[in-house]
Image 1: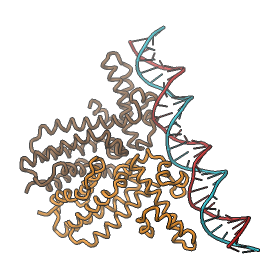
Image 2: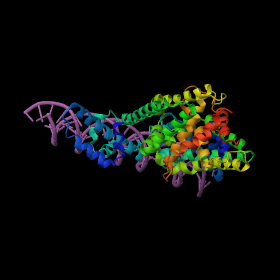
Image 3: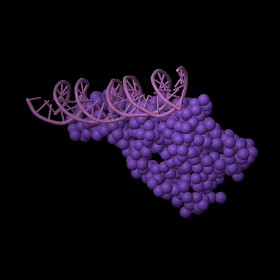
Image 4: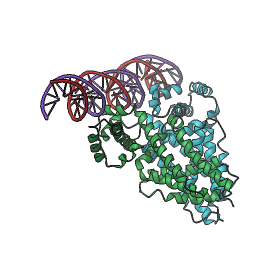
Length: 225
Length: 225
DNA sequence: TGCAAATGAATGATGGTTCATTCAGTCGCT
DNA sequence: AGCGACTGAATGAACCATCATTCATTTGCA
């Protein structure tokens, strides 16, 4: 979180800045920033490499060289190759959910909330194709990963959607003859498929507008008559 | 198809039965049967092993021993480990689409067709959890595989759905302000998510009935007012 | 006996991980 | 300020466990 602002700087600038800082290690915060900087480089490189070649086909050496770092250095920041994948998921999910909740808190109508979720979902992944590839493809490459790790974050995400549908039903704007959890899954599944298709498609079209298409059908389907 | 009935037998029983068969390869037909027989055993074992441990974490030796066959034997029937995955996809997709088209030909109303597609989709995967795992999880573990191989079969599947929606629009039963391809993706995405959730869920609930839930929302969303 | 099918031990490549070594930068002392 | 000792981050070559694949040998049926 502290380094959030730094991570927006061009890598070279940040690097130099931190080098300078590390001459005064009195300041513990600066030291931590310098560390998370290299960690970020590896993190970033990993997303790129995994997206391009697939997790299992990527060598740790590939990630290291993409990060401009020696092979061994990777192990100063991550316990193992698998932990890198872990970290990619955790970081992204944390950010997605954090931002999502913050935004939703300011919206009243359940249907507007859902629309915003759809927009955010597609916007985020649409803005970072590599991350999207890792999320849609690589993170699903093992049942173990999916159940063991994804579950926590994913369940939370799905729950946000579910609760919103719940609200809508109580407010009378959504049909009451559908199960909120099931509807949430359908909603998520539709968005998910939009992303997957976008990734696999060669022609680069904007992803975010698809939110409208999904909403047209989904809202039509759950709206109270 | 032939082996569909055998797949319901406990593995050990099927295995033993096949062993007995291979002692009587009198005629050519029987010989061919014996061959495709062993191929089937490997195919089946591969689905089982890949589902349990994941494609990349499975050794060819695991598949071989699960099939009750020596390591080298696998290579008498498949060119490589990857070809096994290939074959799993091709076989299943061929069967899905073949059966699907056959069934749909006998249904008139577009909404009934869609309902049948949903039912078949969930029924099939719901009947073979291992195959479902391989389809939902393992086959997606590489961008290369997804774009290179899946595309052919998947595109065909999506096209069937799209054409049905097309029909419905022309017949006036579906709204005309939605794009059939997009609607098809949403429909597929919803079904896909049902399957994925079913796989990851610990409690074993029947998958097929979820078709109703999906239809309630999807049809409601695309129905002409 | 002859031949195709099956075997499974051996092979060789691959790639995750380690660790002895380097060296830039800091500290403490004069 | 200047100098030697020290620290620990970074390196990357080497290690070695892991498998996919091969092939010389065996098996068993006709």
